[in-house]
Length: 326
Image (cartoon, rainbow, N blue to C red; front, side):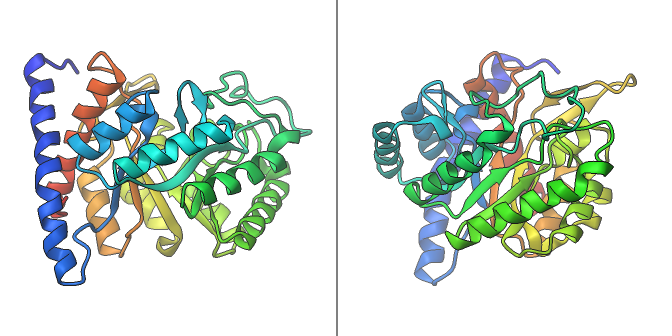
């Protein structure tokens, strides 16, 4: 889908309007002891820019957000920041009055030891980080430390590169996730499993099976309908209907178009096969009140920054159509 200069300017106007109106609504709600935000609307910072201060400025001042999700900055994965860089990032967040929804780590996005090499393992889509299986326990400790440093109560993880046949390894993978969730619980941090098309849990159907097998309340789902749709599933209403609603602890917003040959391409949130208006209505109906982070992945406007502006405008449009004030 082609976007014109008029589309981009319109998106910027919508984003600016979002920055101007919500604070007034929030102040009115706060005076009544209520929150005006049904979800913690956020954006993953490096979807905008590797310049963390610029990303935060756009998130807070243009998009009108109070929350942001951390994945990478200054051309580093968040898990590889130095102590000084963490302090610098905290100062920038405070200056823009932004809180952190979660640490979007690459935890367990690696090959499962002893299994045949996954066809996905060569892609290494880890946003600046590559940790082998032996480094995962150390990486988990790093993530817990980062969550505490940034005042977040959630860490995102995966469940290893997707295997052609995961059945022989599924029970062991589940045990590893359970152990990690128990470790996080000791530090008062929630472990979020993202459904990811290149990993072993990709769809709502697969996520439902994993959460039946791992009953820990400290283990929750990072629900990503766009990822499920990329693999050919229908995330809403089909996949979502199977999920344990009280264990959805974070949500990513993106969209895709699929071609007859099964290939997909990313699109703005309001364009594509995912019924985001229906999905947002369902989340609100079910009492969801955690993070909703834009992770557009789409770059059709020519740059990450311009593309994220358009996609945020589309997300806000769908939120409005779903009857959700932002």
